[in-house]
Image 1 (tube, helix red, strand yellow):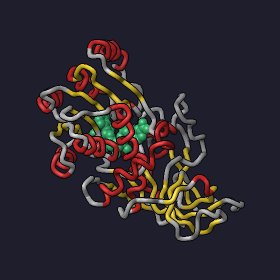
Image 2 (cartoon, rainbow, N blue to C red):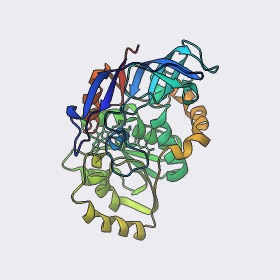
Image 3 (tube, rainbow, N blue to C red):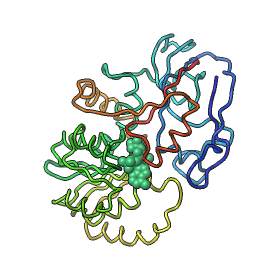
Amino acid sequence: IKRIVLASRPLAEPSHENFRLEDAELREAAEGDVTVRVLYLSLDPYMRGRMSDAKSYAAPVPIDGIMEGETICEVVKSRHNGFAPGDIVRGRTGWCTGAVINGDLLRKVETHGAPVTTAIGVLGMPGFTAWSGLKFIGKPKQGETVAVAAASGPVGSMVGQLAKLYGARAVGIAGGPDKCAFVKDELGFDSVVDHRSENFVSDLKAASPNGIDVYFENVGGRVWDAVLPLLNQFGRVPVCGLVSQYNGANSSQADRLPATMSAILRQSLLVRGFIQTEFAADHFNDFLAEIGPRVASGEIRYREDVVDGLENAPDAFIGMLKGKNFGKLIVKIDGV
Ligand code: NDP
């Protein structure tokens, strides 16, 4: 098989030198193991955190260790009674073309008839993140305003569409005219603002005439600065991700904290961080039952950005942290 390992730790933006493509042998399958070939690899912002050895909610990838990641695979051989050759499954095999993995760690792909790639996107971890953050923390009410950045991506696109389903107004923030057009015209957000525009701060204010009740935080940095003065009393801020800060410390962060803290106090905000795994064991099946049919019928829309070949994963990943992806980033792999 081929696999990509972490060659060195990036200090700021990752580069090609931080990754190494290498050949590897599959380990011998033991009782309970399943041999799979990888069809699709999910690339996600959290992987930047795994490349760093700073303290976090999950252990870092060791140097020379395989890059972590979730994949959609086809079962080739099975020594586990829950799986048979030909089954389509998802599991955390990492960045590789094939693997031997304990079957207890795999889950059969269930997409209610939608394409299998949705199991790592809109009907997988990112979609669930949006759903659980909104349902358990954001709790939008009828007529309220929900704002979200990275709005064309798998988390943000779901946040806005769910906000609409729950009777709220959805304001999207995205980078560049193409993504903005998609968010408004195809996803049906009520308004969208381009964070790369010179007028971003005033545009966001104009797009939120009644202020913001739920800000689903995906990016941090300048976008947070623009949102902060617009938050209404008793606003809720599910803190889901800070992608604008992942490539290095933001020098002005220290200056921002006092402003953030005083807004939290003045506006009685609820600011609550979360990692989707907190909710997954108890609620993933409810999510799939509620959202799966809506995705399959086309009521909930999504976009995927599919890159071909494992060797192109590092480039695609580096680009995602700068907004080069347009939709859920997936690597298609002709696994062995
Ligand atoms: P996306 O596919 O939306 O990709 C990331 C997007 O972030 C880019 O396309 C870009 O969109 C935007 N972005 C990148 N840099 C900046 C910047 N400097 N300023 C503003 N926007 C920027 O990613 P996901 O939907 O997979 O993830 C969205 C967020 O959710 C991330 O922060 C991620 O870490 C987080 N997350 C958290 C989870 C949890 O359990 N807490 C689980 C899953 C995801 P644009 O060009 O529109 O700006």
